[in-house]
Amino acid sequence: MLYIALLDDDQVALGISKTVLESFFTQKGIEFKLDCFSSPLSFLSNAKEVEYELVILDIDMPEMDGIEVAKRVRDIKFDATIIFLSQKENLVFDCFSVRPFGFIRKNKLYEDFAKIMNLYLSNANNLDERGGSLTIKSKAGILNLKIRDIVYIEGNRNYQSIHLKNEECVDIRMLLSELEEKLSSQGFLRIQKGFLVNSFYIRRIEKKEVVLTNGYMLPISSKRREEIMEEYLKITRKQDNIFLS
Image 1: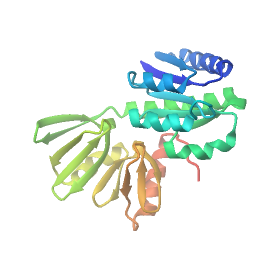
Image 2: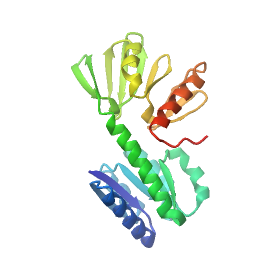
Image 3: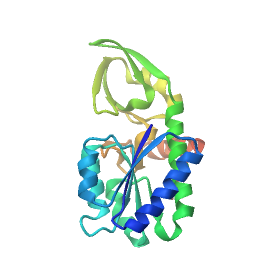
Image 4: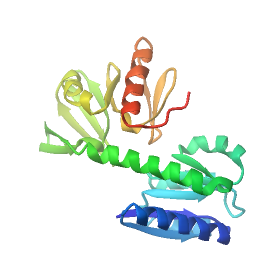
């Protein structure tokens, strides 16, 4: 079941978006639950109780703008996928701080919606297809971790800390190079001597650091930055993701 929240203070626009959403996911044969809101405060109150995976927000709202709503969504549920709706294309640049997945222009609703939703489903399917697991020994005993739940691994000589999507951390005794060997084929990148990162959780690569989808920033090897960029691009091309240069 995919839990979706749609927020727009314009009742007419809300109704149109609702119809487009329902039609799209029904045609795809995807089981979903769509909750519609015209009030940001009502949505935020509900978001504390419901684990929304996909949140679609209008940006320009008088009660509270969509960017501020998105910031609060990040506080409630860091890994929710956020997509913005707006008639004002210039506002797209103001959205980057909350790491949106995409931007749908209301004047090109049908065209943009199909592109963004298909890309969203492609990314979700790519992540689900990596349904393998990593079986390891820890202080708590034998653990079986889903590979798609591992965000990054932080190394310290013979001990490694595995950071998970739910923000839990598992400490194990193993060389980082051993984990790299096991996970490199699953889209993990060694960005620095002490960090192995799941490429699915990379938001962007900057000059001195890698920014993750949860907002964390990890150092990147300056000597290997170009090589890491190439490896990352190879992975994203295989996944048919869009890369803007």
